[in-house]
Image 1 (tube, rainbow, N blue to C red):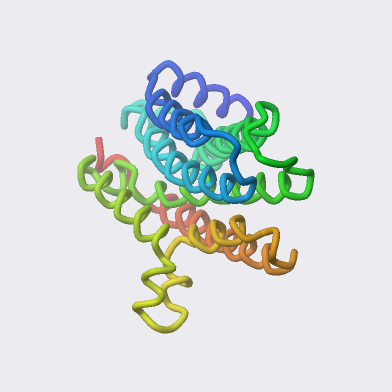
Image 2: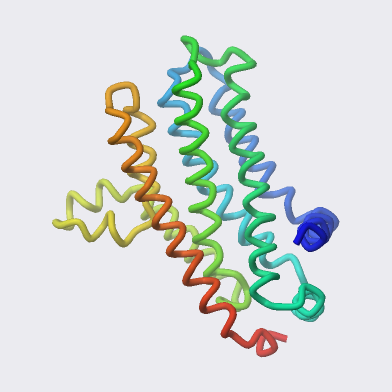
Length: 236
């Protein structure tokens, strides 16, 4: 698995497709912190949403960087499609982990906050960033070229899902019942608990995080199940 991840990292960096999503995410964070001082948790909530969108873009870019023929060769070398998909997910997870860590510690070490962040709030912020990063990546799994062949359609669908997910609270006010929060990617609930973490109980925060984690696991689980039964040769 390590050799597969090293290959995927090398292949992706050589393709230079990483530049857009990673640079876009970093620039957005830098713009947010260009004015100081900033409130701690409100800022972390904003950068978590930035990472959510950036990770979805990164995931789509990463999943589409290999030519279909080379992808088939990679699957053969990995010995199974499931193993290849797991390697892809682990590699994306590594990207998200590093970005989440960088975004959380950057304002602390550069003095961008109006008060000390503290270990508790930094821990919550890292968990929220990592979960929203994984959530964005999980959404992108279903919009890669082998699932949605037309890039313009995939980009439009991705943008629509991101906007609706972030604005889920306003939609829930229009559509009664729990359906909005259950069906849509739970970016808004995680953003809300990060913004109000200072006034919420730890159990309330953990509940939102668990909700996001369950959603991510379901998305990835169904993707692995469905993808292992798809014939990628149709996209050649």
